[in-house]
Image (cartoon, rainbow, N blue to C red; front, side):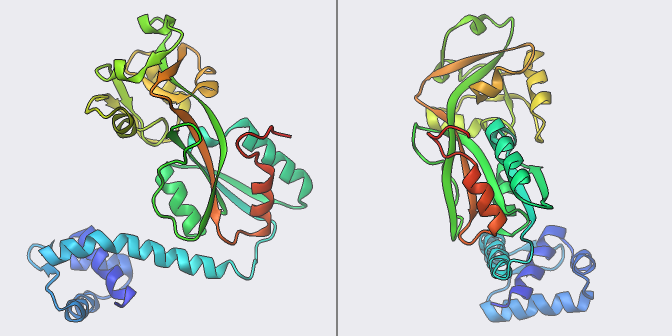
Length: 299
């Protein structure tokens, strides 16, 4: 299957228009039509209805595979491009917000001390974006966080030839407004909070669908939704009694107007994992070695 044809197919469905897809891709509309016709001939199935533009059943099935196929191809291209390491003193670190801990900042400071003329960039991204940036070489290292049973890995998708290892495990806490009746408890059970008011903040806090999965419930329904990577803004919403959220206990305890209560049941930890490709740059490997493994003390 020609990947150029597949990219054209995805663009047409994303824009719901042959002409807009042509403009986005830098092709003529005639070329886009020819690409779709060639792909349909290759697969032996009609993929698109033309007026209005919509996928056929075969097109819908192909669209279930296409984004993942194109991402893996981009990742392979980026992996090959890394072989002649042309950026020995450049580093991009992608982190989900709660994964950027003091230990990570200290490791980055040590790298700056040890590496002459280091050009470093830190990006705070949603978890899925961290993974995608590492796979496609937009980032040299990634740090993602989530909840899991103690010592269990995070439930991450198949990332191809990558290395993943634990960087930290911390107690999980629920954030309550300071005056909330449950804020006086020494611990809470998540199953007692399934009908409470929650903030859905999948880019920043523990996603509510993850809480539903570990508690095997359809509860944890959001009162409001928060999008983005602003932890302090999220804490302000909780302090204003707009809903509960779940974060690692050491981080949660730093916000004003908030009381962080540890989760007792189910037995969960907030886990941070470091991710890099199978063949990282020398600078990326150096930072990875400086970030403490779970169970090690930061130097």
